[in-house]
Length: 180
Image 1 (spheres, rainbow, N blue to C red):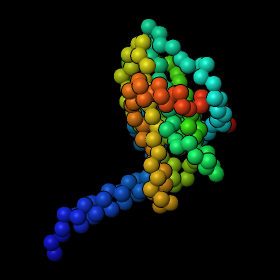
Image 2: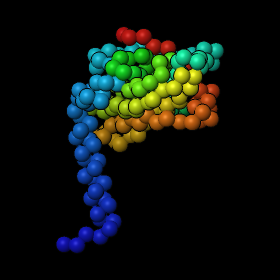
Image 3: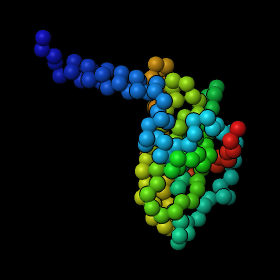
Image 4: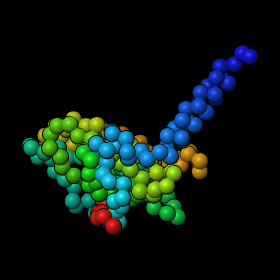
């Protein structure tokens, strides 16, 4: 049986998505890369949002600034989408809906993590390695993809440039969080 090019593409897509969905149901925080970046699975956060921009962080000569910007569409959803933010194996806080968090880090290698707090089979994590330089500001966008009830929500964590980062800061609310 000879497969056409279109049939091969569809077959490969189904295989790749099936593998992703099967791996997705595993305890992804037990993987070494996730343990190096995320915090403990049992920690959850309460998040409140503030529309003011008054507490933007300033870069310094001895630290780097990191903003995590949750790029969730501005829709009225029946529930909130909260993502925990981790660095080097510990949670630093969380974002909810379209919001941002910022923190400072020492120069050098760091491992970032965002993890869906909604739990269950539709939870997801995204990881990113950063070589931070003192005085620099880094903007990371948390992106959401939805693959239906079987696949759930898949997160991505992407470095964005300063222009996009500033735009996202100005069009988002500042998040404040504390462990439940």
